[in-house]
Image (cartoon, rainbow over all chains, first blue to last red; front, top):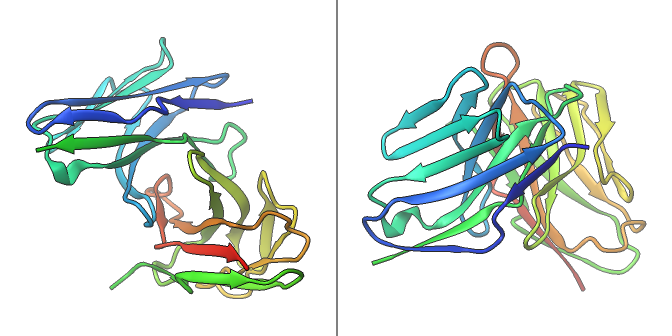
Length: 113
Length: 114
C-alpha cells in the first residue's frame, strides 16, 4: 500500500536560515504531490502543488522539488521567519483515484528569533 | 467569504451517546471529506462523498456515519460504537474540473469524551 514518510522530529532553525523538510513515499508513482501548512488547532492550508514532470516549483520564499527516481520531495523555506513556525504536511493522490489524498504525519518547524 | 465552516469548535460526548459534527461549504465543490487527526499522526480518512446522495467509506469508517443530502452539507455522526472518539476532526472539500487536486479544510472540531 502507499506510504508517506515525513521526519517526525521537529526541525528547529534560526530566523533567516533556510528550512528544508523531506517527504518520502513508497509503492507508488504519483502524478503530483502537494504541501500543506497546519497551525495548532486549525485545519491545513494548501501551499504548493508540483507535478511529476516538474523538477522544481517556487512561490515567494517557498520552493518544492520532486525527484520521482528517489521518490522524494523537498520543501524549502528561505529566509525563514518565526511566523513560518507550523507543521507542514505532504500529500499524494490515492493510487486508486476517487479524488482522495493520502497525507503524511507532518513535520513541525520551529523558527527561533 | 467563501469557505468551509465546522461546528462546534469543541464537542463533549458522554458514554453511549451519538454526536453529530457539522460541516458546511459555500465553495460549490462536489467532493467532501471527513478526516480524523490524532497527535503525531497524519490525517486518516473516515468518509468521503463525490456527489450529493452518494458517499464511500474511508480507511477508518467503523463507528461513524454520514449523509450528503445537500451539496453544501456533509455532517458526520460519531456513534456509540466508536470506542475511542477523542480526536481532532477535519472536514474538507475539493473542486471538480481543472482545479480539483487541492483540498480546502475547515477549522476543525475537537471531540472529547466525558
